[in-house]
Image 1: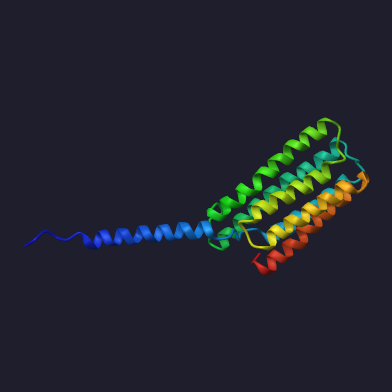
Image 2: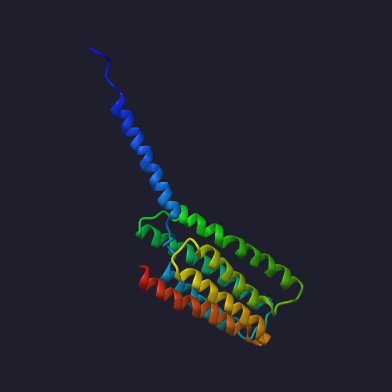
Length: 198
């Protein structure tokens, strides 16, 4: 009698390795579908509240504090909503497409944070609304390349709002922030919630 053959085990291991390779490839090629529509609507609602609270403060430290607090709150809402949606669609939040989304989204956001500090320290607060909207839009366009088609379109609308803020009189900045961070988040959030499942 000969020794037992090991071929079936090797074939099984080879098949499993092929399946792992296919899964990794599909994850990298897939789109990040955990962009939260309902979370976007909540983010828009907090921006409308921030615009109301910041009105009349005319770009003082208190005005900046209100908008920075809203940025932190919106970030938390977005991350929690994306985590909930990714769990519901059974896709890890930081899967291949999720990592691509974050890698595209983060650089312009970091640039926006640095420019905020530099501009505010220099006493140049009038360009802040345009800077925020433009760079947030660039983040969404870049990250949205790994997501569903409506996300880069949303980013382009934020960039247009940023351009409008640069061209408009400085006293319109708060209203344009409300229209951008409030209105666009609510509008596109509703579209994403309806078409892409929450």
